[in-house]
Image (cartoon, rainbow, N blue to C red; front, side, top):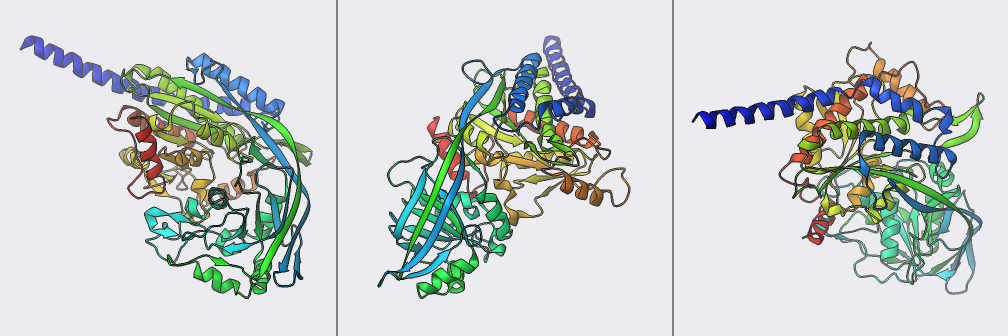
Length: 551
């Protein structure tokens, strides 16, 4: 009995020491330790960290140096810590789009680039020259078995241009998340679906209500240089040749020429019984030329191996993007977009988390993988590349915490989780926050589809339960109206040369949040079960598929 008591006492002391050590390690994440990396990465010396520039290489070198110094090992096979990937920059010119009547080949409308439409080659070709293509309106262009929804209804759209309503159905709170925009409502899904169905082209009808922004956002965004992972679009037979957008007014004219009413068609899409509608009386011709340039981009990947023989080949993935906008036109003599908040702060949080996990490595059952991605600002391309070329199988990843922008303005009693309620990892955040007297809130504007606009989305696309923490707004020990003040400051600084450390910065909030994420990750790393999507979530099926692949 004395021996048993002694062993029990030793075990109790060991557990207590482990817990105390973990809590003490979490406290080592401070506003000073966060600021140290931010000051380096957001300095003018790094020239705004634009993709494919000297500033990016300096950033990569710094990250590799930091991971080596803390004792994290390389997360890529060659030991370099670097996953390089090729990008293409695409510029288009000589854009034309016209509508003709089938019966007599009479030209009915000439649409003007930028004012009426934008279009580009979808398969990285040097140009598009489509003549007299058939058109089919496919409603939202969604196939969602879990919602018992199929807008194609067996329609063969190979060799045809499909015309698509933007967004996803919002008329029923029990379908597609109600007014929350799911991936089905994103333009990326619609273009991917067009390729999958073998369509010749895909055109999305723009309206401000269905997009959430005006035509100027579309025309400005898609008329500039676009970036792709090289070879990703593919030039295989049946691949979509052209993607584009069409204004509501141009769409109205197009449908009128086909003897249809655009408003009736948009309304008809809000039914699971919708069937595709051929625009039988008209044909569309599109011509666009393109030129390309090669760019090299880099992800930095580091690992802290777990201690459990059976679970150490499973991972928690931490992501943050290291790139920003680089050097642009000067404003008051300043031309460097330093990207302090976006996203030197998130990168610093990941570095701090990895150092903390290294300190308790012996207590971790699973391994931690830091994937600090590049090319986020040009289309989430670094995380896309990792998702398509993962360094560990997605079925072996328990979850992803994506840190893109931190709370740099002070401690808050609340925290926002984009992805709230969608998976068990989000539930862990709620659990830890409640223990600390904090409140976790969902995204206040789900209709904007923010879940699909940062790097965690590409993790979710390969089935990994992912969350995207956002700063809270209920500031502690700040003056009345402080939240509104920092909201305006943050909005003014976003994607500008003013994203620098300023007089409003107070990293005590970022420190508290990062400490919370450390505990969430610790529990996920040591949980008996892998994290999972909630039943019926749009990414659940992919998760189950990935888990089946590793059995």
